[in-house]
Amino acid sequence: MTVVSTNRQFVRSAEGTSWQLVAATTPVFPRFPVTVTSSSVLPYQPDRELTIFLAVGDGKSRKVIEAILQQLSHHVILSTDSGETMLERCLKEEPDMAIVGQSLADLDTFELVNRMSNETQIPVIAIIRGADLDRAKRLMTDDMMGILVEPVTHKTLRPAIYLARRRHQQMISLEDRASNLENQLQALPTDQRDDENE
Image 1 (cartoon, helix red, strand yellow):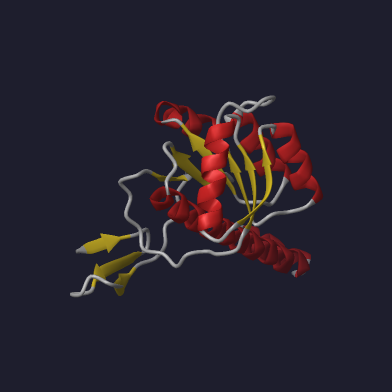
Image 2 (cartoon, one colour):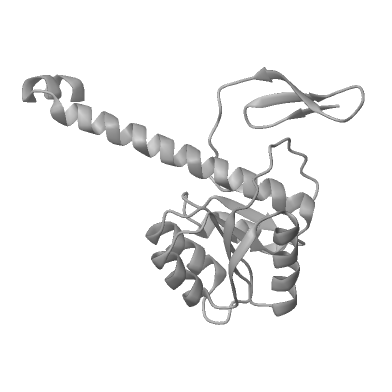
């Protein structure tokens, strides 16, 4: 069995117990957030013991997601039904990951994730209904790290966290490179800078 991710091709071993990298290409960064559904199959190295803020309106759903996160060896530091509480805490302290679900008590899910993307440097995953996927792609900023389509399971949440964190790291790396290039350009003499701009 062969699986192709964004920039790598993997083949399952004959025993079926591991994956082997057989090809790699130049990575392509998606314009829209990475989406994970129950049918996705992605090789990854799991992230463990992350600090996570969770905001989901429905209490039962929140407890289920919190239990899955704990089983994945993550630490849920904040569990709330309030978008304002989530945003306020994120501005005071930065968890490794924030996960935002539906039916929040005070804010629309899309409004919250956009504000968090604009006001913080925290990777955010939005949990949405399948019917909201097109709306999510239209309304969310390009800084949005991931979308997870309900229902949430171990098989969908774990790769969603991995992809969101990797995309976040890639974005930070690209921003750092752009900043370094801008600083180098500003350090050039004026006449040489004009030549570079041309």
